[in-house]
Image 1 (cartoon, rainbow, N blue to C red):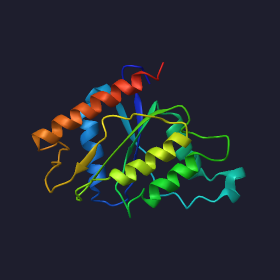
Image 2 (image 1 turned 90 degrees about the vertical axis):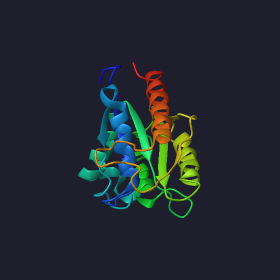
Image 3 (image 1 turned 30 degrees about the horizontal axis):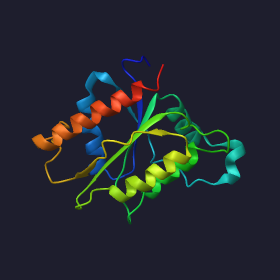
Image 4 (image 1 turned 30 degrees about the vertical axis):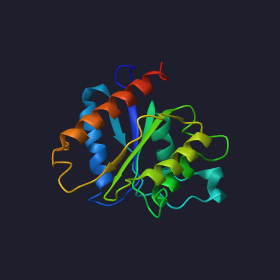
Length: 186
């Protein structure tokens, strides 16, 4: 992908058909517009990681690794489950970062954002995810931190953000993220 239009692998940590985090990811994609190409990485067909198959990764594991490796950057959009990262997202991270020495995430710029209906958004899940990403050698954008409280109707059917304050904040997040990516891609 060209430096002017980076390819972003988007990992949404929810499999729900009505996922509010998928809605947020689509809104972010809309805000970015033609400035980035978003690729939503499939996580729904990944069996639980088992190092016994490291020598012969199945096709869906290989697809996941290729999706990450072919991207210029990664964007994690995560809910919070029991004050941490959802299992489906952690499983995908474990798969893409293995076998040992073949970490597909290494040296990619990344960011994390998430939404929930709770008052603190996804703050704790994001902090856990940042800790994981540092170990994986992902260059994580530190600011702005983005804990979006989801309310019914916040994201319209066309992925537009309906609240002016939230839309302005997300525009700033997207601008910062795209500038962050530019620091690392050739």
